[in-house]
Image (tube, rainbow, N blue to C red; front, top):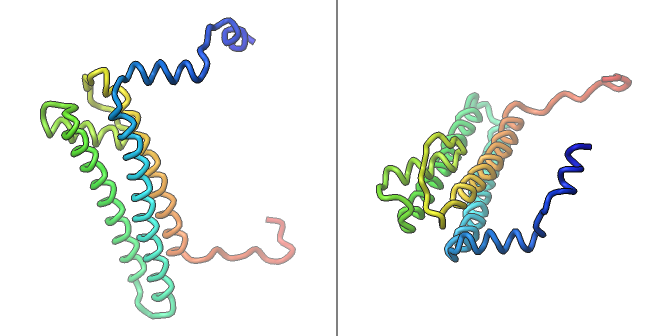
Length: 174
């Protein structure tokens, strides 16, 4: 009950008012471009990961009838390496974006910032200008969703690699 009473007594702004305050506080039209760029990066990431997973599944079916033992595991390992490379490329892309926006004075600091935000480690203590306070949220948003997509694809590939699960016997209660 205490939380409900606290919410009722609070002077909460409407969503429109809150959105306008945040937009005014940022005062930077480049942020909207970054949001569009983040959506584009996630779309490209999804297409690349789907093509890697699709290629793996195609290759897995081709190798299923052959007696080439270990080839499926090798193709899974290559898929993992490709997905890691895609994530690393996205961190580098965020680094270049931040360098172009002059968020930090040094390139290594920019790279570490992009990597920490993308992986949501958040270890460093970065002083951002007021206009870039939302940047960590945007970068970590793309990282979280990109890793989720990659994890789902790798899980799908792992299940194909391990083979179908045996069906329970008829009349079984489990």
